[in-house]
Amino acid sequence: MTYSVRDVEVRAAQAEAEIASASPDALEGLRVKFLGKKGEITAFLRSLGEVPASDRAALGQAANLARERVEKALSERRETSGAQPTAKAGFDPTLPGVHGYPGTRHPISHTMEEIVRIFERMGFVVADGPDVETDYYNFEALNFPPDHPARDMQDTFFLGGDLLLRTHTSPVQIRSFQKRTPPVKIVAPGRTYRNEAVNARSYCLFHQVEGFYVDTNVTFGDLKGVLGSFARAYFGADVRMRFRPCFFPFTEPSTEVDIGCFLCAGKGCSLCKFEGWLEIMGAGMIDPEVFRHVGYDPEAVSGYAFGMGVERIAMLRYRITDIRLLFENDVRFLKQFRG
Ligand code: 2NL
Image 1 (cartoon, rainbow, N blue to C red):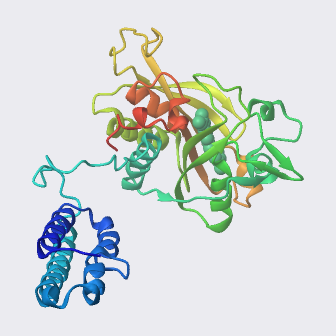
Image 2: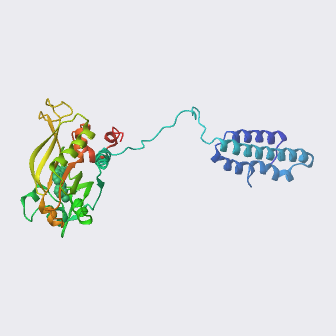
Image 3: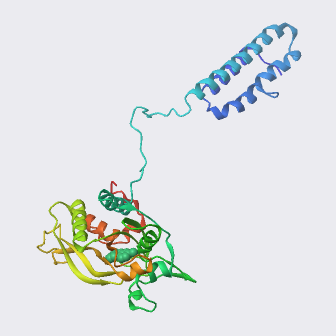
């Protein structure tokens, strides 16, 4: 191999330029290309023995200088490329970041917590119980006799044997009765299940908040007072309320509770279906049969109970027209709530 000092200098300069613009990943390859065992600069150094003795000193000096230049270029490039690996043209690190959607409380959780909070302020204590229940706690203790048509009203998911998915949160109340002695004042929020045909108004899964108070001399007047306070706290101080007689197996007398439509103030609109009233819950005085089932003396104590559907309350409050939206968890829907 014959070469001149100039050849060595030109190759060193080319190597420097190539290294200076190389990506961090390419540097090791370039080191091998120039300084490896078969590298181009190494080749100059190896072949010094074959050059005429008169040129050897000058060429040796040039080749050593070339190796130093390439080594320096490599180490400089390693530092600069490592220091700014993400630096891209047009990137402005002073701009605000792009934030992900952090999520919000689900409107059902939010509504349920608001309802419970109001009752807690009136002295009710929160209780909960299992979603999988026995026939006794879901029906029998609540005065649904076997084969009574009232059971048909609650299309039940039976799980085999004695087990079922609770169709209301009333079993929690029965369990509370068994654990405590009057006075007891409990509110039971939770998930309930019914084998309903799914459509805009009903779903196979929903939530209830039930409450009850048992003590000596609890009256229907106490019930009206507590539910009136609830309605004013949740729907506004000037809300109107009415009680309509109805039937539940576990209360006697029983009532459905309506509030004056808050959208049209009773004039009639699509929300209240031109009734002027919105049904918000059911309630009544606890049937003596229920007390007998849990070992309370119906001559000594009395009590009221009430129950409301959380989806129904949330749909009225937020004007949601399809219950399925509450279970599909489409973020375009959920993002509209700031719970
Ligand atoms: C409704 C009506 C109601 C009750 C629930 C209850 C529980 C026991 C004893 C007596 Cl342990 N009653 N709960 C009473 C009346 C009505 O719910 O429409 N709920 C969505």
